[in-house]
Every structure is written in C-alpha cells, then in structure tokens.
Length: 108
Image 1 (cartoon, rainbow, N blue to C red):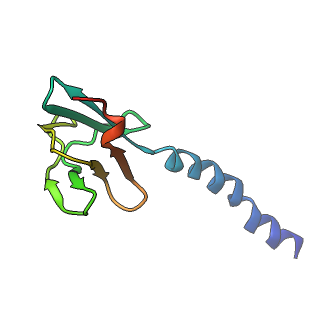
Image 2 (cartoon, rainbow, N blue to C red):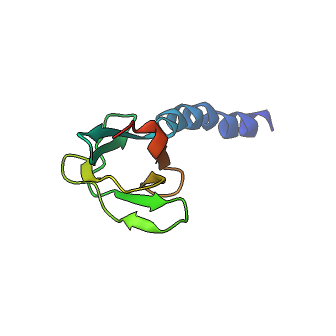
C-alpha cells in the first residue's frame, strides 16, 4: 500500500509548482486624462503580455454603455471623456476583469 501512495503523491508537488505561473497572469488597466476631454486607457497582464482585442467599455453609473470598444494593437484605447460619472471596464474574461473609476483618472 505504501508503494501506491508514493506514486499518487509524487506528482502533487509538480502540480503545485505548475499552478504558480498560471495564477500570476493578473489583468492590469491604467487610464489617464489627455488634455481636457480625452482619456487613454492601456491594458495588459502582469506577465508582460499585451491585451490587444480585449473588450474595454466605458459605462455610466446607470449601467448604460457609453463608449463600447476594444483595445487596439498597442493594447490601448483613447476616447472622449463622457460627462458625468463613469467607470472603465477592462474585461478579458472570467477572473480577468478590472474596473477603473472616473475619479481615479484625474480631472479633465
């Protein structure tokens, strides 16, 4: 019986080591004011990979999509700053979502 247990537990440390890099793939999104009426958001992942084609929507506090979009080839998107309160939703799929509130972007 000990021989069987040894075979079953041997791969476990290897599985734990392999799970580490998968967990380190965190989404990131930064938005900055450009001039008085533009906002530029750039997305990516903690492993240094870009996010070209990832959905980036600008949403009002009433949950209406104000500016639908996707990040360009350079993993960024620039849009006209909406009037009122809003947030930016970077959505790369389940577990890979970031929200940036308008208050964190800076004054126009």
